[in-house]
Length: 188
Image (cartoon, rainbow, N blue to C red; front, side, top):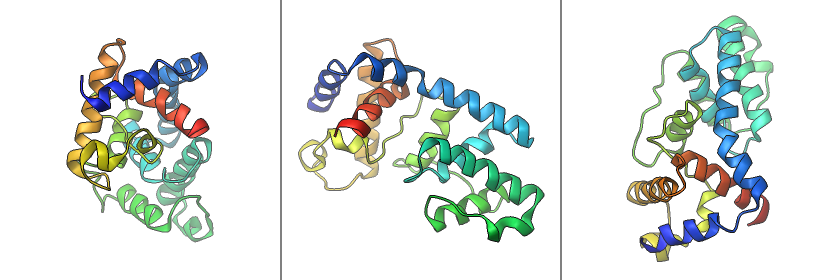
């Protein structure tokens, strides 16, 4: 077990039971919402998950999913209302989401892509793990990866460490990540 895996394991074992339980269920509950919203809007769950993920930076979850719903609805059914809508995330993300809904922008995996991984995790795909700013609170990037920013290699190594540690608890990587994320958001 390397330094990062040891740190993740030790941190996970100190979490309060509420973070553990809620983290294990977080993506399952999010997936149920994705299915409900996508059915209501008559879009594929993959489309709703992608738009939700694109709009996610600095956007609280409840607002995030509502923003995705109102944006998809406006683009598909009331495009004249688009200019009247406001969103919590960055304008560039809103433009990217509009482009995605219109089929002008693809959501592709680059190797260090939080957006792609988050969309996949919302669909319960165990091959991906979401690494965002809250997850970076657990590591000293320079010490752990020899870099200051989250490069493609560092993202991949961090993701693989989460998946490896999660197997020891009979979890998916995204379940371990969600438990740690909840802890980091509230305590670090």
